[in-house]
Length: 139
Image 1 (cartoon, rainbow, N blue to C red):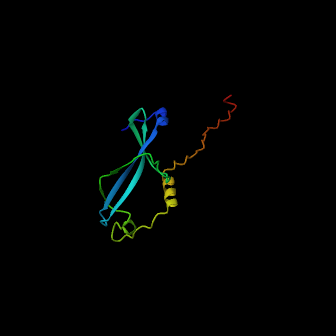
Image 2 (image 1 turned 120 degrees about the vertical axis):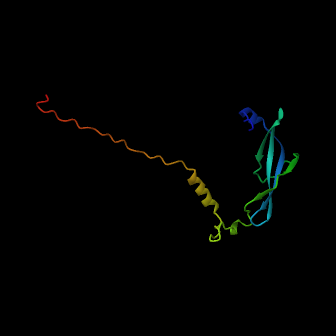
Image 3 (image 1 turned 135 degrees about the horizontal axis):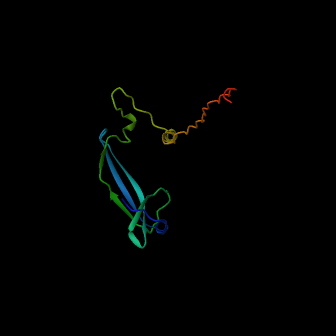
C-alpha cells in the first residue's frame, strides 16, 4: 500500500513523463484477441523522484512534446467473454442474448443502487393514561 501524500506534497508534484500500459486479452468464448492501451501521466516530487503518482490521461489534447513516453506490455490475460462476442453471448442454450445497455439507463441503475436508504420519519405517539377524575370519596 502506498503512503498518502500531504497537501503540500500534492501541490509540489510535477508532470515528469507519460507511461502507456498495453493490454492484450484472449477470449475463451470466441478465441479472438483484443488489445487496448491506457495512457498515464507520471507525476513526481522534484525533491524525491521516487515518490510518484500515476494519473490516467483523460484529455485528448496533445502531449507535452518535451516529455518522454514509456510503454509497458502488460501480462497477457485470458478472459471469459470479449467485446466481439458479448452481443451474441448466451449463458444457457434457452436464453437469448441481452440487448445493449443504454449508458443513461445504466447510470440511473447505478445511482439507484448506491442511493442512501430513504429516511422514514415516524411520528411519536404518546400513550397517555387519562387521569381519572377524582370522586368525592377520593378527595
